[in-house]
Image (cartoon, rainbow, N blue to C red; front, side):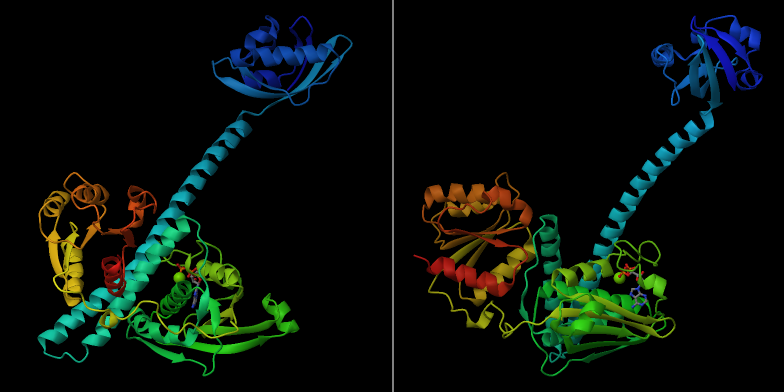
Length: 492
Ligand code: ADP
Ligand code: MG
C-alpha cells in the first residue's frame, strides 16, 4: 500500500491496495483526518511518529492498527519519509504475521508447560518404578518365606531374609538420597570393595531381570578398591541391568564384569579422563543394541525410546552424573542386533576398603540389666511390634502405647520407666516432643529417644535437643536401635 499525506493529518492520495486492505474508498479515506481510522490505543504512538516525521526523521519500524470498513482492525507496518512538506509512505498489512507470532508464543508456552509436566511425570514414574522393584524384592521374599515355613523348610529362610533386608536397605537409601537430592547434598564417597558390592546385588538383579535372562558375574581377583558412594553405585548398576533387561524382551544374557584399568595418555584423551589407575564395571547384554546416533543421545536427561510410563530417560543420565562426579567416566559400546556394553570407570582408591559395617550385630549388644523398662509410643502397630521385639530380645520390659494420651498416662504413673522411645508425629493432641516435655515435669531425668522421619525434624528444633534426648531417623536398622537404646540407658 502506498500513500501520500500532509501534516494537517489527512491523506492526499492512496493507491487501490488500500481499498483492498481496509474496504474504504479513496474518497472516504481522504474525507477525514487519518487519526479517525487509527485504533484508540495507537493514537498516542501515531502522533509521536507524526511528530518525528515533522522533525524530518523517517519512520521505518512504526506499527499501528487501522479500522476496517467492517469494524475490525488491521495491523499496519509503516515505512514513511517526510519530503517537501508531505509524508510519503509504503505500508504493509502485518495482521497475519502478528497473529502467527502471538499464536506461536502461546504454543511455545503451552509446550514448555507440558514438557515440564511430562518431566515431572517421568521422574515420578521412574521413582515409582525403582520402588516397585525394591518392593518386589521385599514382598517376594516374604511370600517365599511364608511358603517355606508352611512346608516346614526352614533352611532357606536366612537367604530370603537377607534379600528382603537388602532391598529394604536400598529402598531406605533411595529415600535418603531423594531427600539428600532435594537438599542438594553431595555424594558420600568411601573406599569400597566393588566385587563384594556386585556379589551382594546379584540376587536382587537376578530377581529384577527375571528367569528368561541368564546373569553372569565375573569379578576380577585382586580388583583395586574404589573411592565411591556405595549407594549410588548400586543404583547405577541396577539401572544398567534394567536397561539390559529392557533391551532383551525375548530373554538373553547379562554379564557384569569388573577389571583394573591403566589409562595412559592416549586412553586419557580417548576417554576424557585424567591418566591413571581406574577400575571398570561393565554390564554387557545380548539385546537390541543401539545405532551410533542413538548412543549420542542416551545420556540426555529424559531421553527415552520406551513407551510413556515405562521409561523415565533418567537412568543413564544419573549414571553419567554419578560417574563424572566420582571422577570417573561411562562408555557405551554397542552394535545393532548384537548387544551393548556399558562400562563405568571409577578412580582407584589407594588403600584398603572398609570391610566392616559400622553397626554391631544384634547378638553382640549386651543384654539389659534387671527389670529395666522402656515405654514405646507409636501409632503404627508394626513399628511398636518391631521395637518391642528388639527390646525383649535385649531383656527389657516393654510397655506399649498407641497415642500421646495413653503415653502420658504411663509417664505420669508410678511405673518404672528407664527410657521413652517415641514417634514424633502422634495422634492424641500432643506430638512426641510435647509428650516427652510433659513427662519430664514428673520425671525430670527421663531419657528419650525420638524416632522420626525427616519432615518432623523441625518439631524437634532441628537437632537442638535437651540432654538425655536423642533422635533416630526412620527407617533404621534394628541393630542401631538396640545400640542406641542401650547407650541411652547406660548413660549416667
Ligand atoms: P530409560 O531406561 O528410562 O529409557 P535410560 O536413560 O536408562 O532411560 O536409557 C535411555 C535410552 O537408552 C533407552 O530408552 C534405550 O533406548 C537406550 N538404552 C539404554 N540402555 C540400553 C541397552 N542396554 N540396550 C539398548 N538400548 C539401551
Ligand atoms: Mg533405564
